[in-house]
Length: 114
Image 1: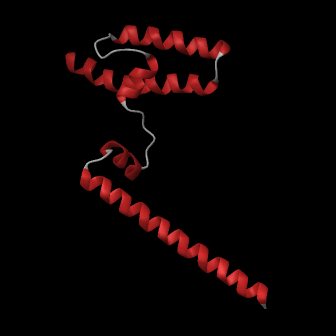
Image 2 (image 1 turned 135 degrees about the horizontal axis):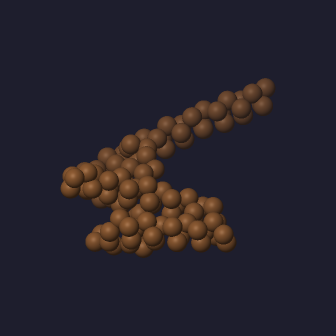
Image 3 (image 1 turned 45 degrees about the horizontal axis):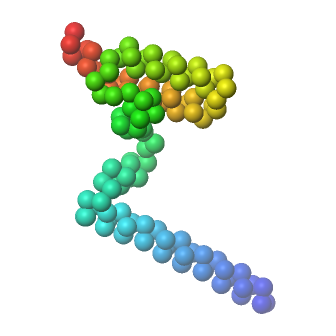
């Protein structure tokens, strides 16, 4: 009998905690949206995406905005090969994702010039 009561209390208590956490999270998102704080983070959370920003991609590859696509590819190849030989798979994948992100930015520019 006591075990049943204890189990019911645990289940009810955990349900209350989950609902309270969800409500607090929604309220925090609403407050951040109203204040304009971390707008990019709020949008990222709302869409549930793990997309890399262009600024982050440029920082990972160590390139600036005014570098040509060939220079970006040269930097990518260097970093990718260095991490393939003696680096980590995680860093290698970050370098690859950064190149993909910048590729999506550079390709429309190249097509507009054509």
